[in-house]
Length: 228
Image 1 (cartoon, rainbow, N blue to C red):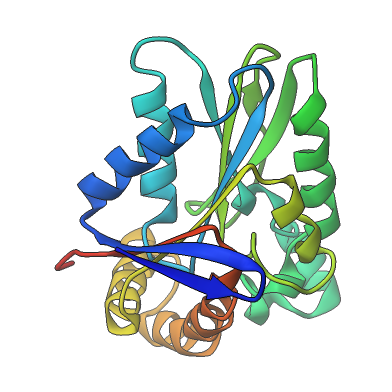
Image 2: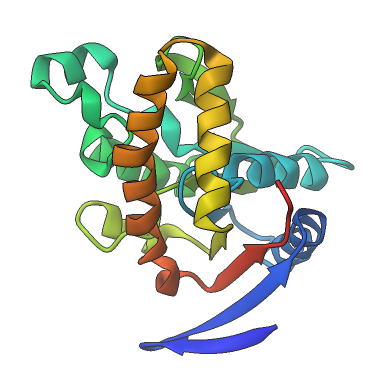
């Protein structure tokens, strides 16, 4: 473990297995205020394991009582039809292909909501949005959100970090990300191998490099120790 100082932020740096990272984040979540709704953000590049860790955290926190819920950033992709109209389909996944302001507003609303709120999801099977994919119950105390761009400094993304009660950055090596993403795209079978490889090289790895530069805005940074 190491403690880094990035600007005015003291950052806890860790190298953990995915299992140890999950256990650590469960402990961190239990240490947060219990008298109000809190928001935990898990950031990192594409393919580093954010969604697996976030959903695992929700499951662990809900093991004894339903106190936590999962909110993915991916539900705020621009609709595919809108990307086609803008001529930016090939950029899908880059920051400008998200409804970032709508995501910020949604998280802001969740922080103080006293009613049930439905939110959108994203289906990789159809490469498009699914409306009302989940419902955050009024009594939910812990919101776990994850996404590539939670810690970017550029507007409007830069507004998110101030909404987070705990900001976590996770990472794995770049080559591992490339291998994972090629397998992920191939598994869905929507595009050719050549298209998938080109997309990973031009979009996903560029996003990985961009997102990695936002690591210093997290309170906790975890390098995941894994072979695959």
